[in-house]
Amino acid sequence: MKIAVGQLRSLDDEALAFAAQLGATGIQLNNPDLPGEERWEFMDLLNLRTRIEDAGLELFALENMPNSFFDKAMLGLPGRDEQIENYSETIRNLGRASVPILGFHWMPNSVWRTSRTTPGRGGTQVTSFDMDLAKDAPLSFDREYTADEMWANLEYFLKAVVPVAEEAGVKLAAHPDDPPVESLGGVARILKDREGFERMLAIIDSPNLGLDFCMGCWSEMMGMQCLDAIRNLAGRGKIFYVHFRDVQGSAGKFQECFLGEGNVDVAKAIRTLREAGFDGYLLDDHVPGIVNDAGYGYRARAHAIGYIQGLIAGTA
Image (tube, rainbow, N blue to C red; front, side, top):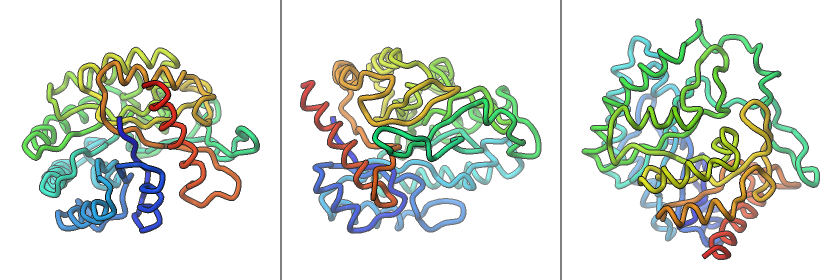
């Protein structure tokens, strides 16, 4: 298994030095600050990759295009075919630029949290979610969108883009709904449980369609039983990379936390990944707000990455 620094939006020399000094070998960017109103272009992707490689690191994945690139596809609105063609061209450009993985989600109204200042260990501030506080939120769009609609839209999308990904040599890694609840803002959430992911994988049987296994979301879904999902999915080669984080609580009410104090025995998670044959990247994800930390959370991310490194070494 390998370690990456993740969730960067933009790239600078400080971030590259941080990753290298921690002993990480990979970089992942989330919704990266790239030019383009409808898609990402080849030269921008190539320049991003070579800048990272010049620092002695690997750009192993980009995660999440702007929602505006595929919101009509997610909601089945007029203009979705044009968005899907632009999405497909981005996949082709990723392949041409030798960027191997594109992470994606199916949340047109994005990630939800009801607090970003919940007290954590030692006075840290963490994000949290409480469905009782969110249940009366207004509609995110002009009407409600049912689970049947969201599944039909996802099937239409995957049947169009997965063959492109196969030709381009790019893997598509699906992130769970966050939080994984039935509906938010009138939009059904369909990648919210193990059954949903199995249904997604059955839409089109392809080695290029799999998961960004966000352990925090799976912890919200299943607690320690998420190790069974790791064993099964990694054993089938369907976990392309891992967001190695955890939470306290379950989907309807949870808060973020430091590794080692959440629902999951993280040492057992590492052992399970190894036993299932996973040899890809683990990366930091959401982290607590540590005192006097910088905006990106360098201190908290250094703690998370060091903790993961210790788990890998200690369970070998």
